Amino acid sequence: EAGVTQFPSHSVIEKGQTVTLRCDPISGHDNLYWYRRVMGKEIKFLLHFVKESKQDESGMPNNRFLAERTGGTYSTLKVQPAELEDSGVYFCASSLSGLVGGYTFGSGTRLTVV
Amino acid sequence: GDSVTQMEGPVTLSEEAFLTINCTYTATGYPSLFWYVQYPGEGLQLLLKATKADDKGSNKGFEATYRKETTSFHLEKGSVQVSDSAVYFCALSDMDFNKFYFGSGTKLNVKP
Image (tube, rainbow over all chains, first blue to last red):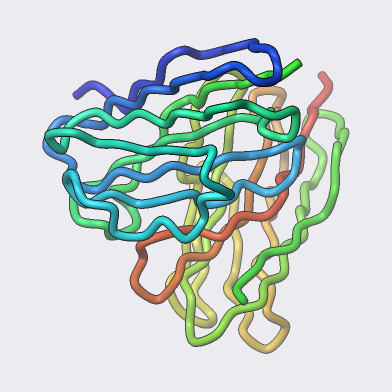
């Protein structure tokens, strides 16, 4: 079984540019989550999709961040325009039913805004 | 709100040394507690978990006991190996298991 795949693994962009991160969940997993770890601090929840619907987006930091999951398969997280404080590692995870134990993380996208 | 505090790293140990990484939490209700590990270049992997007070989670020689009275979930291993070098994250889940609250991570370096 393929795991959760994230693209790209690294991205370096200039302040003010736009970046789109992609997450391919495990096939059949309706639940998809985004988290991020900024500057070696704690990993923080961003949002949760159930299929194509946003179940919880309480962790999205501001309106420069836009997450989509068209068709309930892969998801994208767009940052526009990027700021220096957006630098960090963005993790995606998926699960079959939302129960812990079946929650699989991807290896993350390291975003550097210069 | 819910939160997790874990000891800062890095922690550097010699092979076969005893490991403790402290973790305390603040939560409403009765959360489940977890330790995740991130090996270099890989994603977060579940190491162990405990779902109620006094439960002990264990895996790969690592153990942690859910202590409600001290709101703690310290990670221990009796004899670390070089292959245990990684970043360890303590976490709790909310009541619906729909999201995690993580600590800031502790980097462990084990030297031969």
